[in-house]
Amino acid sequence: MSVENTHYGAVAIAEALRNCRSIFFIGIGGISMSALAELSAHNGLTVGGSDRTKTAVTEALEAQGIRVDYGHDASHVENYDAVVYTVAIDAQNPEYVAAKQAGKPLFSRADYLGYLMTGFGACVGVAGMHGKSTCTAMCASIFLAAGDPTVLCGASLPSLGNSPCRIGRAREHIVFEACEYMDSFLDFNPTLAVILNIGMDHVDYFHSMKQIRTSFLRYAERTGKDGTALYNADDAESVTALAPFAGKKVTFALDAPADFTAKNICRELGETAFDFCRRGEVLCRVRMRTVGKHNLYNALAAASAATLCGIVPEKVADGLASFRGANRRMEYKGELPSGAVIYDDYGHHPDEIKATLAGAKELGFARVLCAYQPHTYSRTAGLLEEFSRAFGDADRVYFADIYAAREENIYGVTSKTLADRIGEKATYCGSFDAVAETIKKEARNGDLVIVMGAGDIYQVFDRLEL
Image (tube, rainbow, N blue to C red; front, top):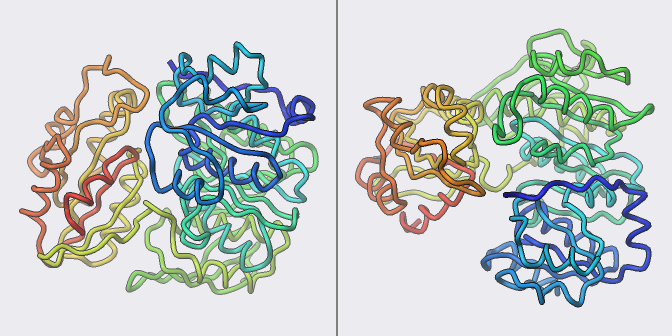
């Protein structure tokens, strides 16, 4: 089973680390963990860590002088003063067990991040069931256009040299992705809590919408008496969750009355333009190279957050104009000999799938083909009906086997179960080899192929020989 978050808080962690000179990260190859490792090294600590396999992320850390051990062994933590872990590890992880037995300070990723973000003037936390990484990336583009922010994202960003992390010299702004899984974001200390949307997900931890709404309300309350909650007034669950919030509330929306809105929206040739308005006043005209209504919400939230932090409209427009996406968020990968165009996307929840495919439909391709790997048995089983309705804008869907992550299949669900529920346009392929061969056989000139999922379906690209 996974380990739980610690909840010591920034003051207690600062005291525990008073004489700390070195720190070890279990699971350092994760996007968020690698960012924390970089920031810790920048702060003057000797940093090391471990992960299962060598990846582009771990190689980038090694290039910065950060030691990475491959595999997990108790000896790895011996020469470090403190240890940070991701809750994705097993409670029997030998490094975790050794650190605990040795009495070393031991912190979960979220708790440690909450400690690191203290001391910044404005702390912008981007939360929501969907769109966090993209909205954080959009915020990064705007804040970079205006100054020198620190950024911690859940995806690698082209604007940051394909890193998830940027360490600013100034400590005026930190922009970070606030993950809700296992209530991780309740260890953060935002001064501005952004909430994009709220829905059912992570059914291995969240068991009801009431529990989820309570968590997001508590996240907003982390802003304290002088902070602000910025939320989507078009999202009914967000409105319900924030209704009891006693602090300062600011809204954004495309349809409902709100403090920040987008008007005169135009979409053409893979671009979106809109008037960014505050209480009816046009602040600037935004043009960006993204499609889909979900990305309009992401951009509107990012622009609103930046404005609340004092960034002028011209820099908001400049930042969104320069936005070039986040890795694995509708990322262009290449073209097949047939002429079919291939994209990569991280979507793994029914709402994300629907939004991505709806945006893809706007691009004007003859057909939209989707290769999908479900992520975790619990999510697939718990949201099976929602998944079966999520692929309406795809002309063909090819299913790889479920990515187990931290789970065993106690639910009796498979990818074939999902393919059979969808019907004749869905094909169960199983292996990545079979997925790639089916794509090669069926995709033709004029088609858009989206390879989608949060697991390891990116391995299909090697088989497609892009």
